[in-house]
Each structure stands twice: as structure tokens, then as C-alpha cells.
Image (cartoon, rainbow, N blue to C red; front, side):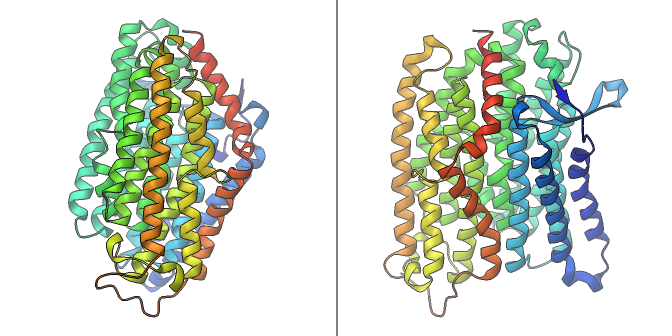
Length: 507
């Protein structure tokens, strides 16, 4: 069943940021000081469109595609302009809109030092590409948006990043391009198999026509490409450099939504189209997920740069999501979605806070920080709130996804892998303890004691109004999802059950 009502809204929400980018790029120099206000207006309209989608969405049918627009785009290549969303896409679409809005608001307090017109033009183009990726129901249309993200993010890091920005941007670009090669090769191979279509719904229906050997080759190709984007060990090395050098708004966008494209690719494309291969790859995916959990957590203990610590924590958190996906169960898929949303909210807060700390102290060095809770009590409180949320303390959003991922590992979909996944369950539980360790170590170094070394902490201001406006929506959602997770699971659970049932038919 598909719902074609209000099909205009998805093209509008994709095109609107591009129109905004064009307006900003054409603004005369006399309006140069108004650019950020124009960007805020564009983001506010985008967020309003997202709210309209929330009201129009049929939550009882969240496993079905809605707002469907399906038009032939390039007949000679059988490429369709096929846009639609379901429960999975809706959750990530709304996360994206909120993330870009919060990042733009925050930039009002800490604007780019030069070329603000180009900066916000790139931000808006990346927003359009990310939203398009979550709405595309054609493989080549997805790939178009997926690749389009690379250009503005690369430019944002290389132009407005830190001292080593060129190296970080090049590393990001090379890893992304290599991953894209594998994804494109996999997509083209799918087209030349029985379906002769790039449309995802058709490919899912014809999954049974693909021999398992072909499925495994294509799944391997797609897995490499998506794993780079997640990222998981050992394909993660671009992430710490990109985060540590990127401007704050870009770090937030990378962590909150760009990383989710890899996991989204597994759940939207690889698993439903290639279920036989997914079943055979599941134990390996679980093992890589657990290794990423432990590696990311242990790497955090060795970080002195606060921003790199938060970056490595993302490797660990995304490992929990991959473990949930690897179970091929409804609970595991639901856990992965919850982790993606919770991580997007919490890690956005941590990157915002990292920059706010650096702006006040001129350092991100954990060995030179200390005493912020006394000097800036409100900032210290928000750091504490975000720390315990990231640690997965019950009552906040970080808890439900990771505990569900661990629980789902107890009974995976494939009964012959129970022993392996129960070992994964124990190791993942150890990962949660390690997370608490490195996060509370970070908190004590930043907020307790006294400042060290050469840092002067005289006359530090507490949280300003713009920071509150940027952070409060994120903090409210972190709290709501922690107390009432059904706010999210109401429309992700039917979708998760649908995907689990689809895989179960092949077991």
C-alpha cells in the first residue's frame, strides 16, 4: 500500500534549501550582515515543513511508503524521480531538519570568520542532499544525493576548518569516493540482474529472483561503501580528523545525520533487497559492530583533545546500531533507529559544548581544562546532562537504543548464531561500562578541580541566549525520548517488524 496524497511536499522540502542557497549566493554585499538571518529564515521554513509532514503522516501505516511521487526522470537509463518516506525515513528526515536549524542558530553566536555567504550556501546545499537521500526510492537518485553531500562538506571543512583542514578534507573526500565506487558498482550490478530496475520497491519484491551467490557479491560491495560512511573499524580513520578540523556546524551535521546514511543504507537497501546475503553476513556484521564498540570506547580513553574524544565515541555508538541491525530482528532494527536518533541529538550537544568550551578557554586540551562548573555553573550543568545522556543513563534518550541492541543479541533471527550473538551481547555490555568510564573521566577533567597549565579562566561568561535557543530543543527531545520512548517507537516499530518479517521469509 502506498499513499500518494500531498506528494508535492517532499520535492518542496528538498528544493527549498537549494532556492535559499541561490538567494544567499546572489545577495549583494550591502546585505552581507543579513546573511545569517536569511539562513535562519530558510531553516525555520524547512522546520515548519517538517512539522507539517508530522501532522500529515499516517502513523498506523508507517511501514508503507507515503507522500509518493514517482515520475520517469531519465527514460534511457530507467531512472525514476521516486520520492517517498516511511517510518524509517520520517525519523531521520525530522532529525536532519532539527539538526540544520540548531546548527544555523548556533552559528548566529559563532559565525564563520570569512565568506559567510559561501558558508551558508554550502550548508543549505548539503541539507538538500541529505534530505533527498532519505526520501529517494530509486537507487541512482539515492546515489545522486549521496554523492552530492560530498561536495559541500568537503568545501566546508577545507575552507572553514582548523589548521589541518586540507588534510582532513582530503581524507574525507578520498574515503567517501572509494566507498561510493563500491556502492555504484553494486547498484549497477543489481540493475543488470532479473529486475532491470533501479526502483527500490521493485528490487525488494524481486529479491527471491537473485541467486545467493550474486546477492553475497553485491552485499559485500554495498557493505564496504556503507561501512565507510557509518563508520566502523577499520574504515573509520577519516572521522576523527574530519571532526577535529571541521567547523562546529559541520561537525554537528556530520555526527547527527551524515553518519546515519551508512546505517540507513543497510536497512533501506542492502538488507531488504539482498536478504539471503544479509543472513550469511549477519555474524560478521555483529562482530564488526562489537569490535567498533570496544575499539571506539578504548580509543576515547587515550584522547586529550575533547573534540577527538567525542568523534571516537561516535564509532562506539554506531557499533551498537550495527550490532542491532546484525541480529535481523524487529527489536534490533528498532534499536538501531533509536540509537541513530538519540546519537544525533546527544552528540550534537557534545560538539556544540566542545566549541563553547573552546571559545571561552581557548583550548580543547583535557589536561588544561578544569573547574568550569564553578565558573560557569549553567554550562557545567548542560555538560553534565549531555555526559550522562551519552553514557546511556536510564531516563534519557541514550539508554533505550543501546539496551535494546544488547537485548536483541540474546535471540538473533538466525538460531544457529545464538552462541556468537550472546558473546557479542556480553562484549557490548562491557562497552557500556567503558563508555561510562571515559565520559565521566571527561566530565571530571572539564568541570571539576581547577584549570591547569597556561589557561586563564578569568571573566568567563556563562551560556548566552543564542546557545540556549540552539540547545533547548535538543535537550527537551533527549529527555522526552528517555522518559517516553514510544514517541519514536510508535512509528518505527511497524517498520522494523515489516523488515524483520521480510528477512524471516528467507530463513
